[in-house]
Image (tube, rainbow, N blue to C red; front, side, top):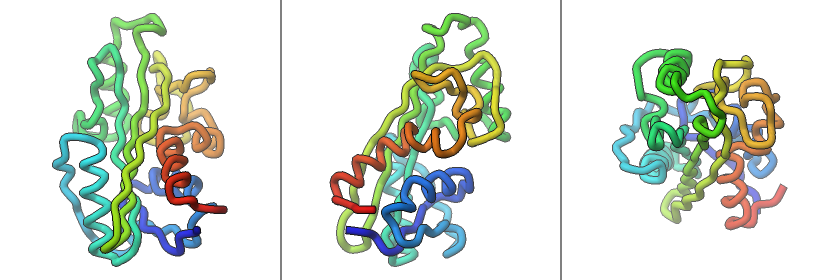
Length: 197
């Protein structure tokens, strides 16, 4: 099975590029949602999965095409799972502002064991008038003491995945996309749908 056209239901260009690399081998054409229409979907869900479903369903209805949406977040043990569901809107401002907020929140946590975290992602694939499929994925690691790297977006400059000495933002996209939370969720989707390269 191979999907012909797939809309990536996000307005985040960095996230879209990740999905292009992750899904490109299984999909003939990957489409950036804002190129189709202007649609704002309120993320009113109480979980990543609920928010992903809201976005995927709305964009599938709007475009008439299969749509893939995600909702994801960074969960830090020492902060009781925060910023979590509110990772993208924990404070106003740029990604740099959010990274600064995180490092300030952990300023008294110096030991690696106190900076344990994970990225979590829920992917929702909505095929119009057919089904919605939800898959979850995780990537475990720790929070660095200071930002490093110019690749990626969001909290990538301070997230060091387990087994690596570099942050997500220091890894090249191929390396990041082979271990990321989105990749791990997409692997499950590929298996369930029996998608082929």
